Image 1 (cartoon, rainbow, N blue to C red):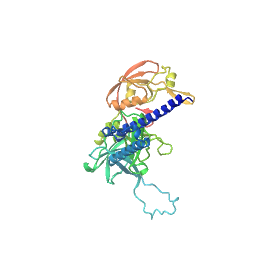
Image 2 (image 1 turned 120 degrees about the horizontal axis):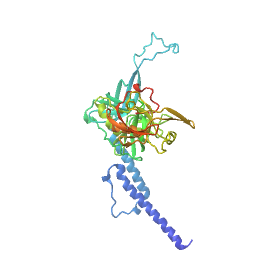
Image 3 (image 1 turned 135 degrees about the horizontal axis):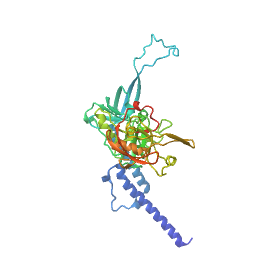
Image 4 (image 1 turned 30 degrees about the horizontal axis):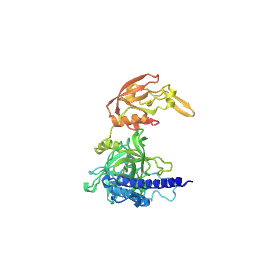
Length: 426
């Protein structure tokens, strides 16, 4: 190796190290105020300070310390607004088989008159009037609701209203406004994958636990778990969520509520890194009605459907790039039925998979493209109300296209739709 070449190599290594140090230092100084949530708090270096005088490990330690302090601050700022909810649900008295329990004498034993199933969940303060938001499934059927704050203040709560379709409920406590600290509400529509997500709740009864992660996906559609209908625009997070977190807030780095934790995907019953939160934008839409003690009315089209896949488009002799929602079934007497929409009338099994074919394909609603079933559900929930007229662009089974006007109605109860739970319902 020549002396000149060696000099160039050594010079290059020195330059690379200098760039790395400068990059780490600059990155730490830029990241600090954003982690802390205060862009005005960004520290500035004295003019006499140079990057080469600050050791890299020290910079890394400073960034980690700033991140830790930001989480500590966020927890201290928001935990007074999070509540632990305990519920009791009255159950029918069990009938004991005294042949299986010979030591129990039915004439002498003092048998309790009432039996209760007890559960727990989370919630958060919505406003200074004592309204607390949680999940429908946390308080459904409760005969007794107790709310405990982080400072151990414990009070009874009453259920004002609930919405099984969005898995939301509002309970109320009687406390002075000075003791209530509502959480600020964020915006779920503008969320990006990768943003910080923080969950505070009571997993497995471990009260006031904070877990952190990121927004791992947006725009999910999940079944409510309470009705045949689906919840659109759901937030997916890898922040650990477990039983007991239900109803608690999912926060951004500023401590704003971006969602209400509701479900997990898990084969073990514990967190597997896929949790879901009802978006705060839907809660903004529903909660004010529940506070009034009224049921929130959703617009209803009256179909079950699926996204048109390339295979279905091919089987139905449609262009392979056809996108839309395939109508699988039409609810008898519902809005779509009255407007003449047709459901699938045949099935095809290919490679062990069954495809339903022959129904109308909805490709647009009020001029807005329908890319899949999820986008149709989202539009109906967020952009329409019962009684509204919508124009559907439809491809019929014979390949013809038609614009059909449908007058939407209010969603029926789950009991009225019993038996129509195989597909997404709208």
